[in-house]
Image 1: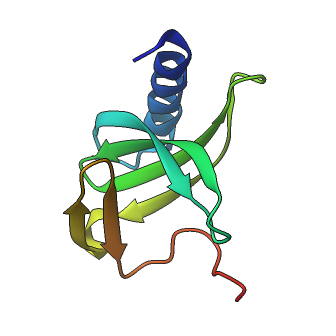
Image 2: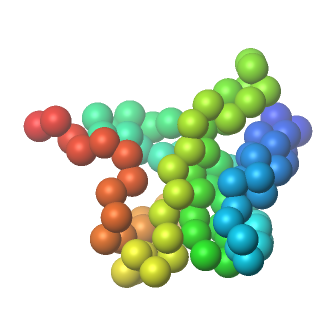
Image 3: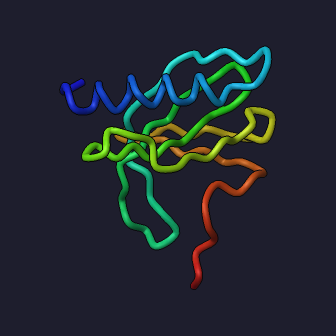
Length: 100
């Protein structure tokens, strides 16, 4: 990854390590583009642990995580891979509902 993405990834993985619950182990992470409820692309970092997937917003100017969501792996029903993207289907809401 380019240096700025690598820094986002490294810091987000460290942040998620501090969020991990007892017995949970951080496995890996990826810089991604996430679509919000309005369909706007946003840079995010996905971190996979032994029990959950964390989606973190890393703010490069502040060099800090702004917010995150945690989704249990038990709630994930399907991961679909495309040519340049993947989609996660879950029984838990991740983010806000589209207002339309």
